Length: 267
Image (cartoon, rainbow, N blue to C red; front, side):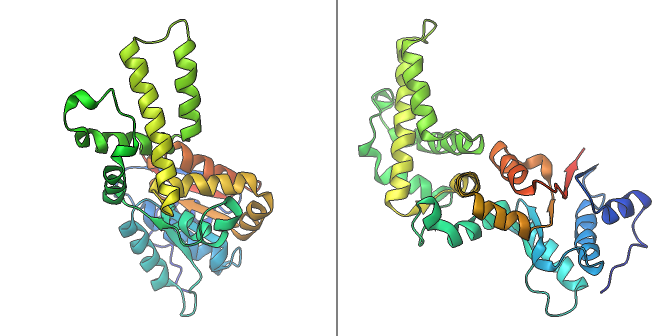
């Protein structure tokens, strides 16, 4: 092993060797937070506290994940190929590929990026009831806004069925919005429901689905959750300030009961 803590300051060293319970690291950009996570992975493996496959490290971009993996690979002897270093979305996709049937998903599902979701929506726009937006003349103008809105809903754990229930309740409230606003909310709720149905009918998931279906899998299949809780003795998150509600809930569920969770965030 090539663990070398001599270039770290005292606070960084303390963070690296902290091996029991949760740890929050808050520091400015460019102050070595990713270096601390990389060194901590090496430390945990070198000290025999975890094997490579028992450490989960997550970040937010493919570039950041690749850089972290390269740093760790350069410090580990040859043969350590079972590292779980990835983005949140890649991690959840990997879990769902192994357990798609357990959550009612097709095993050959495809993940659509922003362009893919726009095209799916555009190709099926005739299946949507969008009377509120018809006066705009060109309904394709608001497709991206709707897709972004649905993505935000998924980030906050608001599912299509939740939106539908809300739209039904709002129609009967004493303080219900004006008729046009109520119509708009109902149309968006129905569009969200149809959009989700189109994704599944085409064996597709969007990025928000990856997080939410993985969270649902862990919530509904306790034996599968138990398997991954036992596998990952330590969880490390970089750029923690960027986590949304769904990602935060996923990590909370997975980290229990040991809560050996280290997160780095910008101040």
